[in-house]
Picture (cartoon, rainbow, N blue to C red):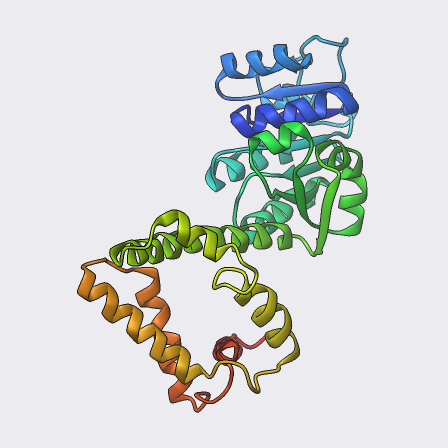
Length: 311
């Protein structure tokens, strides 16, 4: 039996994935009308509370009974509950309530974007009740989830992931198992940090180019090239140089610092405000000061190695 808590845009897409192949889906949302609409759209059952979500199976298409389900002999059944909630506070509140009503052996699959520490706190809260927790961060948008083309970034103990596997398989064929509980969310948050920061850098750089008469279309086309500034730092410097600790040759860090200074001066002359690009200049100054000036600028990675807290 499967429960879904949260019937927003992503929750509705998740319901599409779970209703068919999984069967016996129950949905809950604080907005009862929203839950009812999702249930009707996918042929699931809308329930009125988290206790109902965790209750014993009822007839197909009917709500769960509302008798208490938190004691021995109450007819509890282990189930998997998928969370698709708007923020960490909502997830914490739902997990605290679910821990009091779910049967031992049940699994909570957290797909909401929360911090790794939130997922680990959820597991701690659920442990006394024998309820397992898996984080399955969704690396895509609503349309991809509904179409079944999403990727899941999964963290959790082997036992928990195995128990949730049928639901994970229903959600997405592409699954990346990353490690201990919280690693799925850590990967998602880091991925989003790249996306959001790169968006600012792209807009700043495009504005710089436009200020010098270069069209946005031409600049965009240039950046698509594999040896241009967008992909090369990932595919060559991070994936090859940093991975192998190879910083000899290449573009010296002091040359990269010089180019960064030119960009800052160019922006000042053109009156283009910079935020991300200006902030990104500081590590180049620090790397040169640390004696890395003649090494390829991928050597900036050594700064973070030095700053990494002791394990």
